[in-house]
Image (cartoon, rainbow, N blue to C red; front, side, top):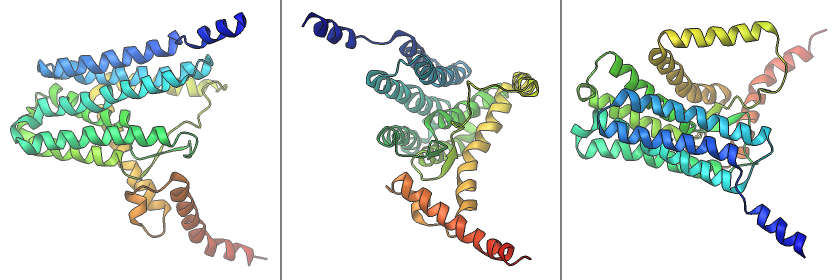
Length: 278
């Protein structure tokens, strides 16, 4: 009986290491909000990228150390909503959208609501969706699109008020991409614990060198290309684009099956041709 009581007390504990990274990401997202309110837009944008690094580490650390927990998953979602939902929306609003009045805060709200819906849908699809792909633009990548744009604009002394309509369009479009059904590569099939050759390490070093030369510009280009890749991948893998491939409440398995079927139909003439070869 005493052992059972000790086990219950032990299970009520919280794993420190993964939740430490989650807390650091939450702090970075909150700092981004405060910095944007004080018109320190570059620091706010960089803080969002710091939150992205922490968000990428907490889950991997939990899996590597076998410290996953329901508390950690819920805490991570709450932190993500602050860092990749509220913080980018307020950053965009304070930098460029405030002078647009209702249109400005509505564009920011579309982004914020899109992030909340994206996180809620992701949590309900754990164990169901294909791990190779995200259904809709992931909230950290969406936040990176907003943050890198503002970081780049700030470096070139661009006043956000002069491009408020473009900023509003990008903000709202990014929010809609999060709740879309477009397929995005998740890169989760990469084996981070596996061995690689020496050339791969040199390529990683080269990437860091390239990014360090013009971080705002390189990150902005990279994340814009990633945001565009979803519609491109989806359109290229289906024979006939349907509403379900763009938006809707379809299950990931239904969309994946439809895409696979369309790909098979496209490949069928080629297969028949090859079967007829001597």
